[in-house]
Image (tube, rainbow, N blue to C red; front, top):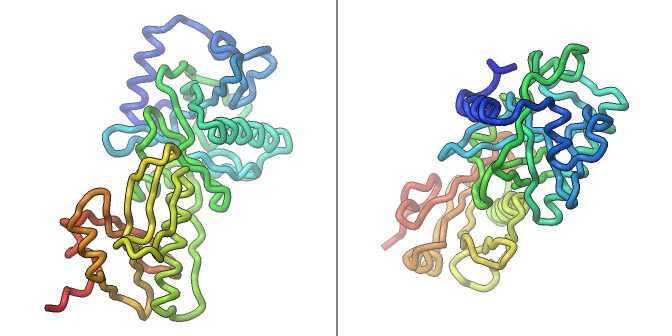
Length: 305
């Protein structure tokens, strides 16, 4: 329902609706190139002419992150209804799987997709159960969207509006999970204290998976003595970050930067210190520090003179 939509998002939808042609929800997707639009009206994603993917973006679930960027947290659990509304029927499960397949298709092809922004006549939690759950408003979005992150293990994808290269923060992600009634990711808990080597290996694995899930290449270069352990690059091979990786955990609460790492820090961008905190605990998270910020990194032992 409109009252569940972020005010900035609703303002854009209202402007598009008022300035656009008066078309029904079916006519809108038909004009965008969906064949047999009336027969496919109940779907939430379509393959249109020109091999273009179109997907519904439920405005009630759109979050606004830093700089006003919009993103949509997509649950990849086909069994559960939107908004934590319980189990889907067999037909609803198939429709969800069809949607995921098309979104993954756009990701694998490195392509953006077109979106239709939609609000509904009932509360979003009732969308897949209430027989009166018809579309309240549907408008084509002129901005392209893309799949910025696809994590099959955590069963979640991040869909972002606008140019590539932006990702929501961890705080934005937590708020979006609450907005969409998605359960928090299950923590990986170890059975006992970890050694320094185990903490370092776990921190490397954590960050490699994190950046890889966003479609970046995260290469382990720790054996090369460069002053950083992971080099993050985009699909074109452009280096984005050079990360000196450290971790803390129960029993291992501090770390050091050696002379090579500190020398690399002095050379500046794109070097960063990445600290993964509480590795193996229920609240593992990471924070990245610029060279000028490393002295404030929790757990960093001061340089001995």
